[in-house]
Length: 457
Image 1 (cartoon, rainbow, N blue to C red):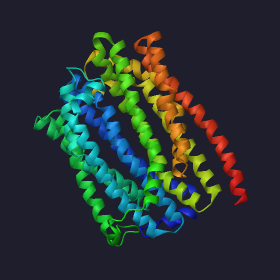
Image 2 (image 1 turned 120 degrees about the vertical axis):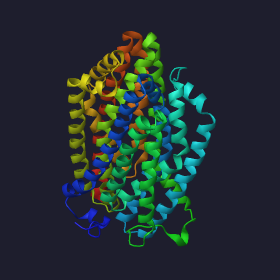
Image 3 (image 1 turned 90 degrees about the vertical axis):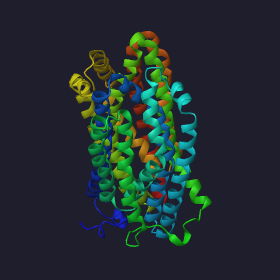
Image 4 (image 1 turned 135 degrees about the vertical axis):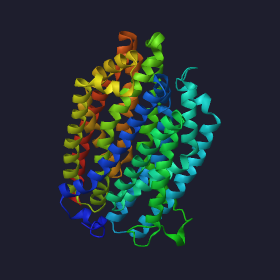
């Protein structure tokens, strides 16, 4: 099918199953590729630098979540708003959203990246760094933060590319970053001996090339939605409010992830004893692997987002419900596969990252306990993103808080005292199930209410 035929207007008439395949598969491929290159980076770092570098990389997770948080704040909101405007056949306003999110991405990256660089050591120590791990964490994050304008604009424009009817191009740009990273990372780490800095340089290089590709796309008048050059510096206060309101949910989700990892790292260091740094490294391995399957589910939700936003804006409620139903089923299938892999092949996965026996044994234990309730995570993620996609940020924010803040932090304060290091892994599993239960109940209540509202309309 040609790109011209794949305009966003087909979102209101084509088969839901066909649309989900068309939009979700490219997003899934892009998400898997991104997650895989994060995993492969970790493997390169573990094998080429050492187990302590793995622990240092794990210490950067909270700060990386903050980097992502301030980026998706505008990327997710902009993508959703543009999809809703396209559903209303308002292309002019969709173009204005593209202009706004570009400048917001640039400003966010400069402010956040600059402040983080100034206080980098203090931030990393607060996040759980030790004298053994901070050299690795500092070296990695300095390069990532210097390249944050590139990273922010890459994520923002990739979301807009998908939301404005170009899922294949969005997939291509993500795959391009992965390909470049996978070529450069081993050269920088093993050949040039740049260590953990080599992985960071490779990441930024890949994003820069993909960003240039997307700038060419959005600068072309042939694109369905392109930069409005006559109003390039025009900001709409009402659009700004909507972008931030809808983007607040994924923003808070990533901020919560940052806060939670701080608690997790502290609990791991406290209960891990002399092997506390290895316990943090084990969490890095478990977390990277778990995120692979969550990122696949995110790929599904990214594919759902333009379909949900368009049809909700077009008041086609039955199509919205069908998209949600299929998304939940697919999400559960994906995370169930993650459960199977983690429970039956934890040793094989751990050995990919390191040859250190202590780190391997801790990782195996972490996999088997923390993934017990992992199957339901897919449903929770889909439901949460469903409410974001139809412009109901308050509900999405609440659901994002349940899994990563409301349930996980209290369990992290209780279970490690009862079960030691195993209590940290138990906390992850218990919070997953409790968050799913709340999401499921919320979905049934809200969908029934919307049924009544749309019957009146």
